[in-house]
Length: 419
Image 1 (tube, rainbow, N blue to C red):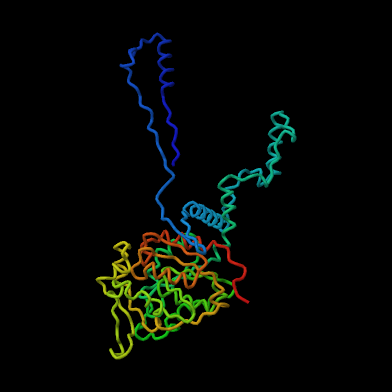
Image 2: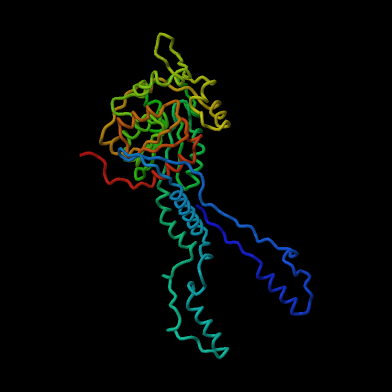
């Protein structure tokens, strides 16, 4: 469905010109319609408001609902832009240039000037009863109404803070598209490098516990203001890492989002959950290379990926340039943290709303395994990104961004803690 612009013809105008010429006894050389050179009307321009968009499916309780959030997303972005513009003008003292008239700013001076002009020209001013009263409560122009509406969201945006936690082998670098989109939308964002990952220089073979692996995230939350909260986003085994942090700092986390991530129950380890897919995903198993820094007679110390298979397993829908970035940036996954069982309580971990984002074309953690985690540990809502591989922050960044923004706008529940 689209809106069409009207087409206008110059036929009437041409007819008037010919009549004028005949009236002045100017002979017409175009009597036959076949000899008339017709001026074609301007082309009709059709503008369609529909466009392709990423379809996002979310599930509440047991129902999956197909929902296109483009319009809500666009309106939200408009309010954000208006809010930031209003904030900018207030900070720079330039907001007055948008005011509607001088009479609203200085009604006394304006009235005296009008009275003087009337007296000089011997004109009596109109009765006040015939003039519509002007006041500050008059409706503002559309752009000012948008600014005022957007200003209501400034404070909320300033307090919405995303903390992004990468998966095994990845680093903070993998979130660069998501970080950019969120910051452009006005959010605060931090992407964490876990121990031995990304730019954090530490040998992955020497990481034996989950607490050691997740220490950079815990340090961040420990220093974070007590009166503020963050939205934790975990990918892959980063799901176990944010669960660990939720248990320690429930008062500093407003929501947790698991993106194709390990969403575990108390008493489970990441290895326990991932072992469910044994025999289901031979490709992922073939891509994994176990490292034994302590000798073959000891448990593995880390897991590496076969470079020839990493695109097919992790980045099967990702642009080539991002695959190249990943191939030179990925590091080994420490094995010890995968074997550690989590201890999660309903009063801490269970008090925080959880959301899950499924990746449909995932060959690392198949959709079937994601469903097992969802069914055994039900979140508030489930979202699904169609056409996404295991790395939606690279293959479907816009769709992932829309979901994160939508979740950030879900009102928090009064109290989820069990008494």
